Image (cartoon, rainbow over all chains, first blue to last red; front, side, top):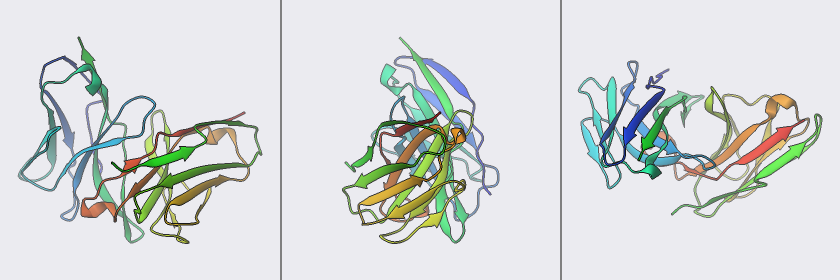
Length: 112
Length: 115
């Protein structure tokens, strides 16, 4: 089973770029990498997904190493609203179906 | 924007009590999920379904039943609630199986306390 390892916490100031790393050393060929975030009192919200190389959308960018064992979520110009728990997830096959397994995530604190 | 609505948002019940958590999604998604979230464990999948009448077992199913009555509605049933089931419960939906790259849309959560 592909598991992920993230730093438990990070801090940044408003306006800074934040890079959150995620290790997934046992990622399988067929697995994708997803990033979600969760603010208090709300459910997780999808940020970005990728399979290899580099992905960018209007919210964030995702860099995936050539061997796919490491990914980095990049948040440009963070604001106080970006304070959240960020989850890195790889898909895991279970009983013939596919699921997202959420770990403990990275708590991002944004300071004014 | 996908909409997933959960009810009740907060519930207190006694040990041995009967609880039903409801979830409705309005996007005709095929897949629906129930997760529980506890400090130190992240989100853990309880049950999921890929259509009306279907039910699949997740990672922590013990003590829970679920039923998918329609494409829109997915219920989580605790027939003999225990204090260990005190948790924050999230419902989610997705268009297809998550490995194909589709997004999960989560509800706002239902906080259950079993005393």
